[in-house]
Length: 79
Image 1 (cartoon, rainbow, N blue to C red):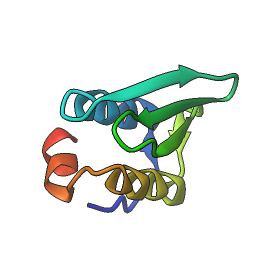
Image 2: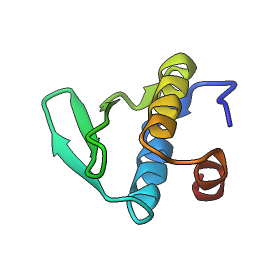
Image 3: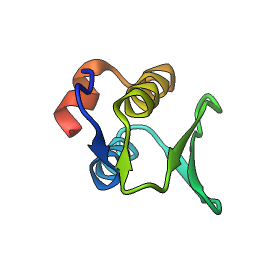
């Protein structure tokens, strides 16, 4: 899966929440970002607090989710 256009933060947030039910994720709220940490391997991604997230940043977040251990199928099924 790869985004071809900018994405609303709400959609990415829903995806990450659904994925947290598959693999334990921990959330920390900062001033400008939400820090998402995979409990099993310690990998981290940051979700900015903009209403619209540009496609490059959204695709980087997807790549970081893959590094956390989520498969493309899990990401697509939960999007």
